[in-house]
Image (cartoon, rainbow, N blue to C red; front, side, top):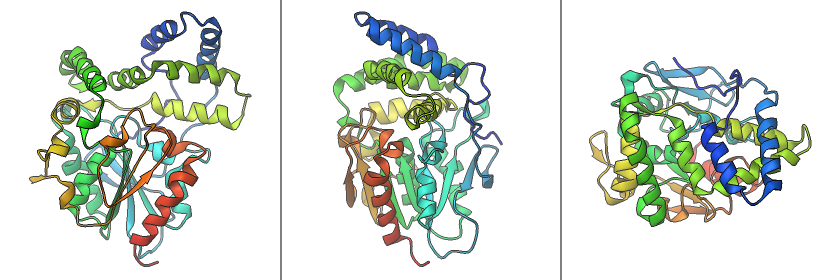
Length: 358
């Protein structure tokens, strides 16, 4: 099985795609030589810094030759409902289990919850026809079925969209959707236009490759706020060596620049069925023979969103029974210094109300 591991053995670390990053850096700093200088220093420092190898727990269950579910809590009997963390397909799943005190999964396990993490693995060419629905039907649901009781499903970003489908189909005990896109009509018109143009530009090459490289998605994320992308590298150049801020930057950037490609059909579904056709919110998205609908969720539900999220606007998140308003960025709500106070603890308290006996 192909497990996702960070880029600790690469000859050259990201950002990926590097030529696009350099072009963007030059454009954004054309009239700001100081920022250009510091951004280039930050880039050089980022590429040369020594990494610690990433370790993850062994898989407990495997779906096919690809996806796995990892147990983040100590093994042992428990009567609590398992908490299944579902990350996006676009970047590695370990965003929900980063080291350096930035692990939501470890925090939840430390508070006594029975935590499991879905690792989507890397698709093979034979997976080209597996769309978003197929990821739920063939990978996520079989892994959930190995657990001994109905789970609390907790999804992040596109993983939250998939988690909604899984929660409906597996009759989950509860569902939490964090920074989850659902109503794609809430994206600004210019953003939807840029996303459509991105797919139009790369679709032919993706069809020839039989997959959607992560660099296609990365370029779209960068275009949302290119100035910020450059500024953070300039800021990194000024961080003291070995500081918590410097180490956190490297950890998060390595994650952001890593990731398996999307299957071709998953890419088509994302760009055409979701961003363009808004099948999720319009009641046309079918998974496992059912139309997936928020009204079909007969369990406690929670959504968490932020008005400062540039990747998933707050208005695009699903309207569920309970809601957390966060003033954090898309990634910051999971791994920033304020995440434990603003998301982790309230989320743990919500889980505790719905997970059952000790």
